[in-house]
Image (cartoon, rainbow, N blue to C red):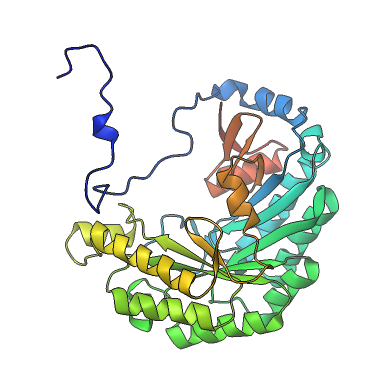
Length: 358
């Protein structure tokens, strides 16, 4: 107990030794913000649309909330993939973009990076992917060198979809590989085996029309220094422009989180995950890749990782789609996550807001 009326910060200090933190805590982006009252959401949004923004780099995020399967580790799964539902969603997403595109807020400064996240954006049809990219290019003030990233996975990302993205103007692909090891991929409920994933990445690289990067996860069940090293070597050797090395977050409501809680599987300890991260850093450094951030490395100058860098720096971000989150001029917001509620709001001509924080 502190009897001197002074603030004791020592509980927040890093621990002595080579393991400074006991665990890894998730931090919510809206922590500490003040919510706008529900009855004031529409008025506040209209006021935001009439604001200009500072002439610094801005972003656009689009959320595509569909997945063909639920990977065991993923906390972002919302809706099972359905072709008709995806086409209907694309129609509504374009309406949401077009309804706001002419506002002062959206037109007052260039947009330097666009990111299609999910979910699985590559689950959309070739026609729908092209429609959305074309709408963005026609309606919003994209900078001439705007980075347009399509997030995807091996499953169903066929040549027709890839070509549609490229022809419409996409210039970066980020593929969620997580691991090239077939046994580990099977444990994560990934439908493609390792050789299929490698062949897909090689074919994407050979097109030579966009930056190609992939995500790798460390701390997965069954992963050790050897399997991690093999993943790193494959990523190095297939000609990627960049790679993300992310620590696994074991989320409580995911299939993996429940399996860990029930003792049906285990994941590497914090100390082991630390070692895997350091192994990855050393490997990328030895390979001559440049460190762009604490989790991303680039091999070529084609890879800028612009969206991820700017979002971490607090850049303003416009957001569209069910479950999308954005931030502008000190305000942050999230669109309705419920698919049906989002559709109903868009159909009624309203911004499908779930909340605004400031």
